[in-house]
Image (tube, rainbow, N blue to C red; front, side, top):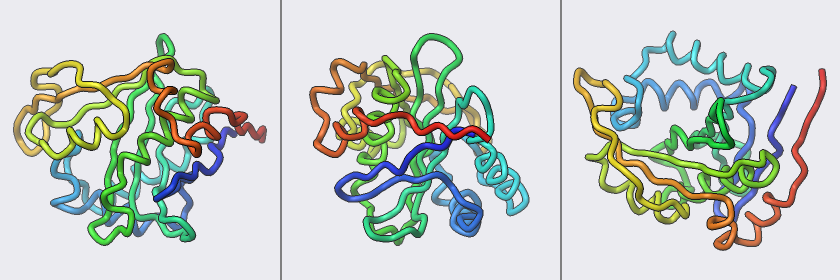
Amino acid sequence: MTHLPELHGEHLWLRELRATDLIAFERIYTHRILTRYLGIDRMDARQAQDAFAQCLAQPYTHPRRRHTLAICAPGDDVMVGTMGLLVEDYGRNAMLTGLVLLPDAPVRGHGHEAGRLLMAYGFGPLGLHRIWAGHRADHARMRDVMLAAGLRPEATLRELFHTQGRWHDVTTYSTVAPEWRRSATHAEQAVLASTRSLQSS
């Protein structure tokens, strides 16, 4: 079993999903507005429950490739959003995925920090070299989030995914470990230097 440690930033922190997060997870992935720009279609309740079960099983896979984490506010253990890291099967690359915050989340405006914490873990304990992310080309507000996370514009991938009955272009961004490390905050440097948390069942 491979669990990520808690990752603490200035305005939010990340932790593994727990069974008690189902209500918040279901609220996100069945929501018409919150799923509008994701690479998957809005789910019904059963689909969200099945997806949640798959997320809970991630720490039990080996090697672990998918990391779906809960976003929480400082001093609070309640899940208010999700963020993921998908480690690719080749090279030392990964993709940031699925940043979603609930409308009433007290950490709104700081979503980029969730990405930065995951990148610190990727470039540190996971030993990755390159991390990239993307957003639908028509989701203009995400550009600022990507830049704040320390990612640089890279390309436009034409008609990459199909949701809501149509194909969508995706704008991509990336960074590499030596470049990103130079911008790491004190909290991110602590994650970069941490030891990977491994538990054997």
